[in-house]
Image (cartoon, rainbow, N blue to C red; front, side, top):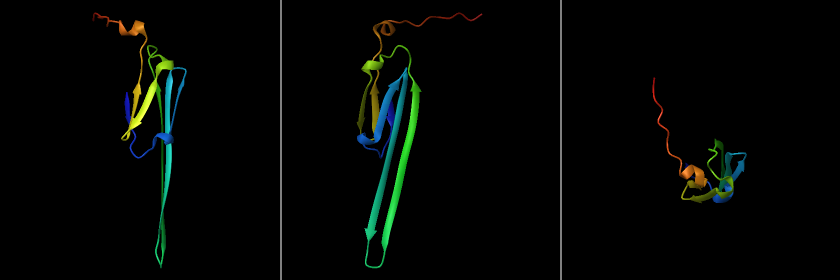
Amino acid sequence: MELAAPGFAKKDFDVTMDNGCLNISAESSNTKEEKDDDYTRKAFSYNSFEKRLQLPDSVKEEDVKAKYKDGLLSFNLAKTAASKNHKPKKIAIS
């Protein structure tokens, strides 16, 4: 699973698992100051977001891994052995 989050650093993220729910939040702020003889200009920016995703029961919570590179937060979600062998069931329409 991947989440696009450009403009953030790895340290800006807080990722937790709680009762089958993957909680992702990030927050960053930036201050830029430019001084000249006649003036001083300051620019401020603040970005944040929060996502909550309910994962299927087939995902092993203890094996969830995350990686952030080039503005893309990637998750490796390992499934239980029983879910890997699961085949879809055909449902007849009446």
